[in-house]
Length: 338
Ligand code: UD1
Image 1 (cartoon, helix red, strand yellow):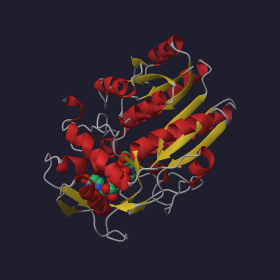
Image 2: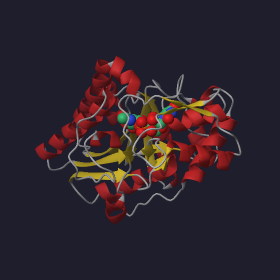
Image 3: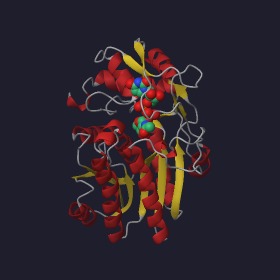
Image 4: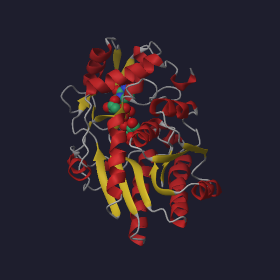
């Protein structure tokens, strides 16, 4: 039986595909390449020495999804496919609702029709919204999201919870990611944003590579030790391993289970800059800019539930995250375009 990975050519999907293949799992990847490219698939093969199935497919296309389920014996799905840019989601909310929510509903319908009722869903710490204090725990009230992207994650969590209530055969795991950064230690796969990066680490690596003049630090007047925003950065390979643990767990329990995947430790923007400079030996010039709308001062996890129930714990520290992110950027200055 195979695990279907939707969005498996993307940043987190590709790292997860490698962990599954290395654990001896059979996988089928689908992706529409909206925000990724085919060369990633060659790199996954190169890094694992393993073959796997791939189908170009959009999760909104029910007929195409049905064909995938007819062709392969799929017993579980890790669902990454979705749009993820906060700014773009404010400009194109309907595209986000159609793609993320509509796509997930279609995927669930096709899964149910084929008797496949195990899903690991790629959620986000963004669902905790503005009204909770860190460290964030899974039992906190969610919602009050600050942008349509975050709202799609919140709504999908609600939809999947309703699906599981309607049919006790479903086993659904909602994984709330904190801030994934870093890259595979080989430097062969990593995060390759289109255009100007929205997120901190890809922006820093592009400054390090001379592609951008300096970093803009969005706000230095937050109620944090140095005034800059504090986040729970997690190495993407640790995050990928969390999916393998969630998959194992889902075989033994039904219903909905929710886990934070983070380190439990927050770093400020300036601490990340310092860690990056230490790991790479490259100076990162920065200027202080106004706060970015929708940003929180502090956001970090309590990851103890995942440790207790999934036997998973993030192992890689901030310097390793920075060193791996830099290696990826330095070896692939233009992402996968080289
Ligand atoms: C954002 C999204 C989150 C999403 C994540 C993807 C919200 C509110 N946030 O998280 O849902 O899952 O991206 O990784 O929906 N910063 C700078 N300069 C920059 C970029 C960022 O100073 O050029 C600062 C930010 O103000 C923040 C920190 O760096 O304090 C991290 O920002 P970022 O990497 O964009 O992640 P989040 O905003 O935490």
